[in-house]
Length: 367
Ligand SMILES: [Zn+2]
Image (cartoon, rainbow, N blue to C red; front, side, top):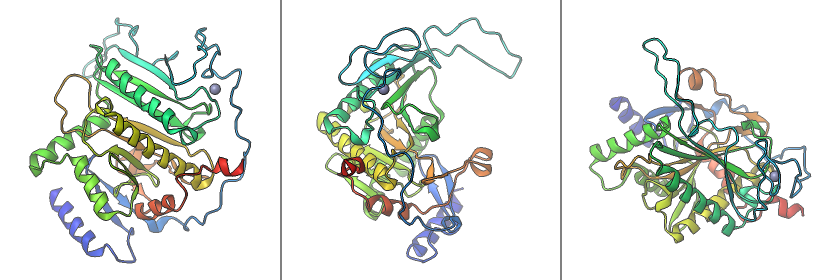
């Protein structure tokens, strides 16, 4: 593995400026320790800037049968308070919970099972039904970050919890038809595979490189050195479309200081992170003038009291679309065999995002 990595790195350095960039290139994903195949020549033609036709009427600010709007009754029979900021409640259909049945049928060898203990919660970002994170004020985005901080800390302190996963699924193409801005939290009795993989890679990097930097810290430096894929940067935070992106418009938003959990951020770092999130989500929405769909996991170290100083917390955006009406289909290489084939060149996709405003949301222009 290390032999082929060296060959490709050398080939890449030599061919960086070649016109055939992105054709039959493999890029190493250092966080997952796997290859991503870049085959940008496969995309039939470049994106030429038309926007999606269709719904232009924005949703109303309040919907009386939305289970997330203030004052409404949920399917459990419980009623949301008349909340005015961020609102968190226990998921009415939890995938893990304190009431998980403990009497389970024992399966035959080599199968194993156990109770799905833990917690599942819903986080409403705003009482407003019609906003996306891109349209929220910086103060209100900071409140969402502060909620992720307290939730990660509190849920992580529960004895049965080993991992707190905060995430957002946004858009109908990822299965969310309710536009009310919200995310979810799963606090589980196991560590999610992605973070297990990243933790192992981060530990190996520190041991083998002998560097003071974390692996993610080294990635930030590499992105700063290249510069073409950096979408936002200030004193404390950075956002970039990684060199090894698996999805066309994949973006990482991170604090510059390496901390394993979001709750370790200081107030100025939270402020910077909010600015970076706002910048990225406004660019996303402006790209095709639609509420841009994505899956947004927050990558954090486990919450089981171990030493995770090698792990650098960050927020990942994984948008499923390659073009306005074209999904990235996961097929043979991805679902079937576990490595991604990307039809787009990360530098070209970063340039598209950089070409649109990160200040004025398109809905403000229409108004
Ligand atoms: Zn609502």
